[in-house]
Image (tube, rainbow over all chains, first blue to last red):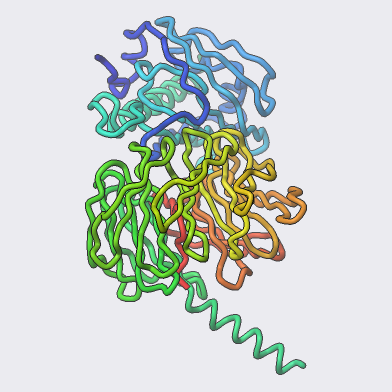
Amino acid sequence: MRVRLAAALAALTTLAIVTTALTTAGAHGPTRRKVQEQVEINATPAKVWAVIGNFQDMGWLAPVARTEGEKGNEIGATRRLTLKDGATVEEELYKYDAEKMSYSYRITAVDVKVLPVTNYSSTITVQPGADGKGSVVEWAGAFYRGFPNNEPPPELNDEAAIKAVTGLYRDGLDGLKKKIESGS
Amino acid sequence: MRGLLAALVLAACSAASAEQAFVTNQLSDNLTVVDLANLQPLATIAIGGKPAGIAITPDGSFAYVTSPDDKAVSVIDAAAREVVGRIAVGGGPLGIAVAPDGSTVYVADWYAAAIRVIDAKARAVVADIAVGASPSGLAVTPDGRLLLSADRDDDSVSVIDTATRERKAVIKVGTRPFGVTIDPEGKRAYTANVGSNDVSVIDLAALREIGRVKTGLRPYAVALAQGRGFVTDQYDGTVSVFDLATLAPLKRITVGDYPEGIAATADGRRIIVANWESNTLSIIDAEALKVIGEVKVGNGPRAFGAFLRR
């Protein structure tokens, strides 16, 4: 079984089957893990926010082919991401602050073969850069490993979950930087 | 009059100065001891095995800490701030509670629908109690007679007779109860229901749910003080406050990110909150309902259980 999402988003495009729909606050392991990644972008926070600030458009993330959802950027808004390989991820917005350029959402349904985590939530924030010029984008996530019971298989343990989310954030943020700085 | 007031304030200060928070930092694998009088860290104790749950004996002599990844409970001499024993319990130990007299420690096995009973003197598991699925929070009534287990994946609370070590009742509550807290009178219990975003109020004489209070998103645990309930809302980064008599919501107080463990100081004046994402404690004035202090702790503080040493 291939679950090396950590090896970037490559795995996202190789796995096509979506079967499970993990329920809200479902069963999970004993230890919630956290991942935080940042990127500096040579553009104003407003310009970066204009690219990522719409919850109904995750087109800035390379593996995402389509975003469909309801209720815009309201609390409780939902979106369904269809990845280029056909897999889907369902998400719900639970915090949104345009002034602070930050929003938080959680995954309501994803197959652990697509992302080996459960009870996943994350926050994206845009802040001014330290030099007062560019921007810093931070993507932070909190999640449990993909395997809810004791003695997880290696592809669904804590390390696999951290590796996958770190890879997702790293590639996502680096891609965002490239996209904005190249003006595309 | 002024002299009396000054004496009262002094008494309150000296009482508070004895109090400490023992904060389990799950991701840094250790425990931070914080002096609650001056809000300074006093010590860091290495634990290992992703420590999560904690129970301190009412006399303040021992702290028991669960390490799910090591399938063990650490015994800490709370005055010396040293690990003095380690008890193998198997499974996935998470929630933990200690009897009021300190003689017995109860550990919830997250995976096995069972509670392990530890003889505190022998430091060994001496019995098992069958409960519902994914037991998480545990609490013992002040008289020591009843043990409550929040059985998360069964949406219920098991009520155990500690004398016979058998389950005498199952009380249906909200969806996925996690923390459970019993009031000082032993009359009511409160569960934080992660799935239904509310608190269930249980009457311990009638052994049934008598009320429900809406909270923020993903409530974790409940603390009681000043006739109010204080609930950590993990996803909202707030503490929801409600009135214990009317069960009416009173306020939402913004704390750090992903607040989890919560407890009231002995004098009921302050509420201590562990913020899992922010790696801090928030200190709330329980009367004024506002944050009055913050302390840096280790990575991923959970402080799940009775984490204040009095």
